[in-house]
Image 1 (tube, one colour):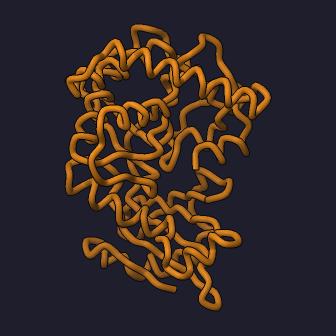
Image 2 (cartoon, rainbow, N blue to C red):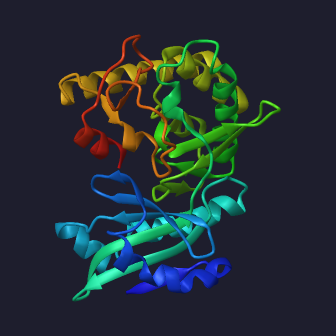
Image 3 (cartoon, rainbow, N blue to C red):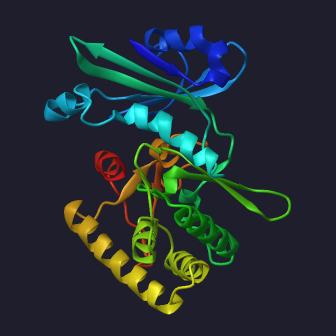
Length: 292
């Protein structure tokens, strides 16, 4: 077993070393499909988020084992440090744990400080107009600033963005599930494509595209037209692929840091895509594939 630990948290070394042994029997499980996420309590009282990545299969396992590509857990540990250095909020990384068997990669673990932001953007899915306009504007500004710094979250989806609003009406955002990041120039078309992964009511998406374009000094009307057109294509593909069922399970809706919000419908968060005015649902297995 190999462990990489953030020097700031060296006092948790013994606890971190025990995680693979105690993981199945301790902690509060907040997500379990291909990967498993638990919130655990460190000896010093720190609430930590532990994500155990599934053992890769077939050729992928060989690719990761030979070092041809960094394992997801390793990327999840390394990338937040770059985000934080650039003023982009994300849960602080504590450690990365890697297990191997006969030289082949086994489970990997990413340990981070549990984020206490109280909301995810899934809450916008069935929100009425008048409740999310300022959120859309500030989210667009957040994305534009990040892209202009040469950083892009490749899975910029509702469950991967946590937020809260302070007493002054300022929204604060934190990125999770950051093992898929792009570091380098992000031009306007690429940045807009990235935002098209965001789900929500049509009006919310219109505002998001418009404010993002304005932040980047681009044609806002064209950005809205392009964004909504591609949303319609995405929606059609999902309906065909999943037989009309586009539903996110409640435990997945919280992303890496489930907030414990009540499910919208029957244990699931029902999403409104930007191209239509009626909710659609996505099966649990399909959601996991779509979001990973």
